[in-house]
Image (cartoon, rainbow, N blue to C red):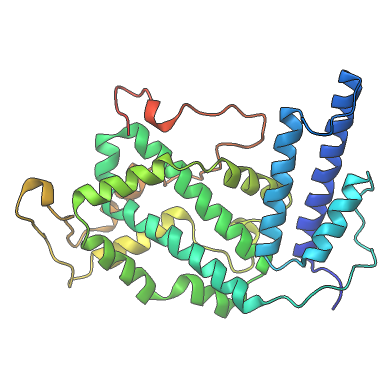
Length: 302
């Protein structure tokens, strides 16, 4: 079938409209300066171009043919409004198994972050409240980005189960963090908190505005909070060691025990993942936050 699906049309339309917006910004800049802006771009135009690139990357990851992406962006650059009834270009075959493999790699990354949240989030929140907030924001943004790409791919129930539902995957992550020292967990937790997820947040915002995201998917990806809970369920299995100790206080391993549901909820809340989190950067006009290393929350810094 040489025409886009409903989901593909949504992302293609978003690319068209953002390309049109970039064109208008450039024209406005040129009229203000009285000269053609070939090399130097206004900051607003630069942000708009980056937004288009993020949308295109997500479209490719979601199985939208590159030929259609180029076609719709070019129309937007010419100031031509979106049309769904185009004569869509012939395109190269889409390697869906490879796209699913790529997405699976990203799913493993966010599952690894969820394991860190489950193993260290509660302690981290008590020790470094500011870092905990940054961690929660970045984790949630990355989960939403992966979920949006999964939505574009329009996963089947079997594909969703393969990516998200296998207990062996969650058990493997639980076992991994079980073997990590408290110092290693803290270091990984802080690394996630310091990550620059601004471009991912812009992408999530743009796709959400286009009607693409976990909440709209037929087979939705789990939320960040749900992922943390699934790791907790693995950590509370009777086979989990109650305490694993090292030779010195600095070498103490993470402590786990069979916990009740309310303790799971407390850990999720402590990590800042209990609410309906949204990406912090809703538009390029939003101000940048203070760098993570300078968070001034009662002296609690990463």
